[in-house]
Image (cartoon, rainbow, N blue to C red; front, side, top):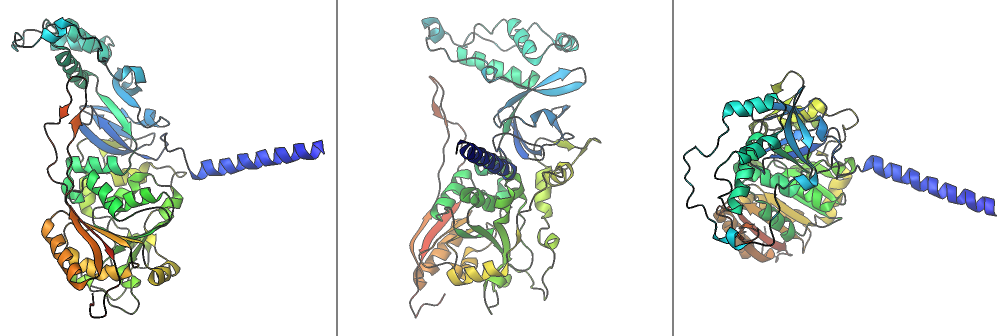
Length: 476
């Protein structure tokens, strides 16, 4: 009996280990980077932002220096790296957590610090005794960036006369110049939306991250839901919905006509194979039985007689997004020849064979389409900033289940107002409302907490409602 029980325990433990190994193989540790994953790099506290695909041969250009991204592989997200000069050239060295902040705020403030101000300081370029030649000599001797910053502070005649806040600003300004730092961030819905909204908001229809969160909330995007999405913002909305579902339910990225909309941003999310399988694409003509789609006239796209038969034709990215990715503020140099490439090319060239996985956006099967025709979708999300909202909603609203919510984002108010008027007149939806998100960031620091001087004044508009069974006289 003892022998049998021991064997049972060993088998159970081995099965648990095998199960854990299977889980580890299918779901990687999302807190640590791996070869082939996408990352978001913030240089000097977000002054410059870039998306990159990690590989041993990928490089990053910071200012006039080019360094390898190999040290970033295997590091946890949130790590801070500092650009240093070595024998083989510049490289990124990991900064310890206790060294991330240069100075801690003093809890006990003396009376001298309160009285001190900057009125007596005159900026005439004579306060600093070190010149450019001295700094170059220190670099040739192997001085680090922090040592150069400390030398500049020691040779400044006005540093001690400044307030504590001014001293901290002086440190940060010199650190950004002589010891730039890179923050390794995990790309998720908010960080990706912030990066695009900061540099090129028109690429995503001025969809701010708070508007994106409100859009998902009003559409009741929850686990085990079947979501119908019209995504004309490069795949940002599709990726945010997939992230919210967490590998449950399905996302039908519908498109009008014969050409699917680009989903390049979805590849930045680092989704697993299981999550990618749950993102499918389908034409609106396939979702209707014996009905011709009228959205081709809405979008002024000609309908061809035959559809593409290969997935390569369905997943051709738009040239506009590729141009956007290559014109990010920080230049990523991929490969050993030092030729700049866009993120799409870089990801395809440097991802190893092990990291190649299922591509999101496969064609929906007939079983799934028939199931959606019978049961309907649980939510509808539309983000078409350059199209009229009412014809699209008029086409897709019958695909929703009764009592299912829908949410529409648009950067202008009038299309949503027209859409709301038609819905109210035909009595096919209730709880209709148009919201305008408002966001203001605050600086939270000891003795200087206040609203930020610059803020985003516009975040678009959102129309939300719930579909109901129309009257016999009302036809949508």
